[in-house]
Image (cartoon, rainbow, N blue to C red; front, side, top):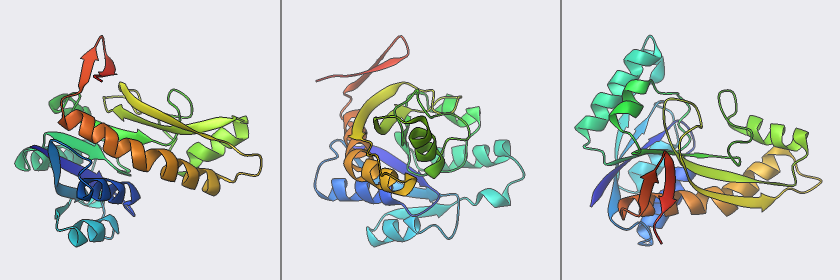
Length: 208
């Protein structure tokens, strides 16, 4: 069984989706062993505790810069013997010391269809505001591996939803979370733990 460490910063809805999928037996070959939060007041910590999952707080504000914080994160991941790291609403960009130590072992879910509306500055409602301002007819979410560049790692899974003419950023965000993020993230985690993702020429392929 692979050790899955989930990193969070806020409410933890994606974490809850992972916990629920694990409870239903949908994550095969791995289990969530620890939840690490960048904030002591993140509600995601409560979700983890309610599920009996070990929690660790590494408060970003207690570290002077990204490098020292990332080193602390790396030390904790090593201590937890992480096989897979899942960024589930983790709002801190990690230094490359982490991504280089865990190549193709860190996954993130981004609430848009990469390469659209992604990269630095595109997070939370800003992503959906940008999509609506552009007038796209479909949007969705992307589960991808994390590398040194924001939202630039190999794509594992993508899913779409229709964009409606009366959508607000909040409504579109909710539709994407419920119909794509909460389904694809647990699926991608299970695929990883089952060793069903192959990397070729920097691209991710799912073995059927």
